[in-house]
Image (tube, protein in one colour):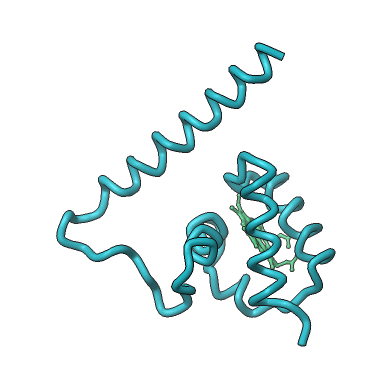
Length: 104
Ligand code: HEC
């Protein structure tokens, strides 16, 4: 139990450290990054930040899948190394994708 908590804490600390490193790498005058593909909401921005490190976000935005298929895709991406470190983040990424990139 204690060891599990420590692992989570280390994980979260690493995620916090790497995202602040990224923020610091940007010029201080730059506005919050909102690319042409970005959705205005926080979950959309989280998806864009998390899912555009290995391939362009356009590759994600080009796909339309059911919630179940997105869940499978997100799990595959986590297996490949996507930085989704909590159940909540996994759920909100899947929910956002299903809502915005669902099957028509
Ligand atoms: C650690 C690197 C990495 C990250 C981060 C990543 N991907 Fe991927 N993604 C890949 C690789 C490698 C492929 C091509 C291999 C494949 O299709 O299995 C791919 C392919 C895809 C594809 C096309 C294939 C398919 O299954 O439809 C989609 C859609 C996708 N990624 C979505 C996402 C989403 C959504 C996220 C954020 C949750 C994400 N990716 C984050 C590495 C990554």
